Image (cartoon, rainbow, N blue to C red; front, top):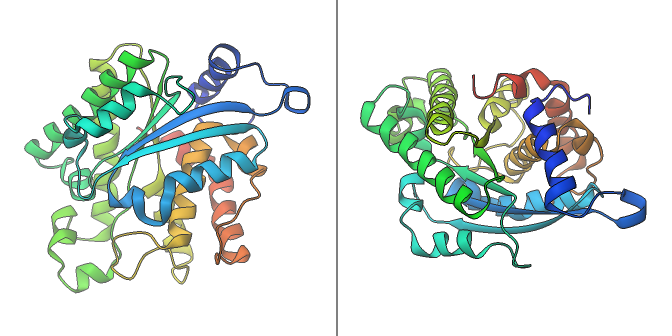
Length: 284
């Protein structure tokens, strides 16, 4: 796979295809099953992001995904570590009874930025991620953890002096930088706490920055300026799928959500394909 994306992904996929699922011979044996569990809050729940990731992976013809999620409004990763229902789902495994191959985790949006400058927020984010990594590896030592890096809020919220926006930074640019730094640091700490773990940052927020700055008219944001519109969720799904499978998978995606203009979808997909350096810089 000559994608420019982290070699860890390639090693992980090889392990999945060889040791975790039946060997992949696309035309002869069909797609490889992959089991993905999401932990997050409304940023993941809006427009059913987990289901969208599943539809995209299925449309690639390479993967047959099993998708489930534990999504609780405003939850931090730390709160997910004590949520009985979510932990039961993690322990139970996918609907076929097998353990999760991938666990996607999304930190609360204000914490994701504040953790770069506030000690309490840093500890909250790092402890939450480290605990979830440990709990996931207890069920499957080879599990891949994907840290879903969120996006900064819309610039209009700073003009309105929105309290939550101001908690993330003095401007959208500062919020973006803080989110990038906080996620990279949290993953580094989680790797130190969990030797041998496989953790990747999926740079969703970094791609939002690229797309929104170049094409500000594209409707990435919901009307509230915080959550994603359908196109923003699709962009997020493209980035997460790219983190899982690399360029080869992205190029073969054919599914689109209903009522999402094909021209807009093609534009955001091309941005993800054209900027492998964003994947390379994730977690650094």
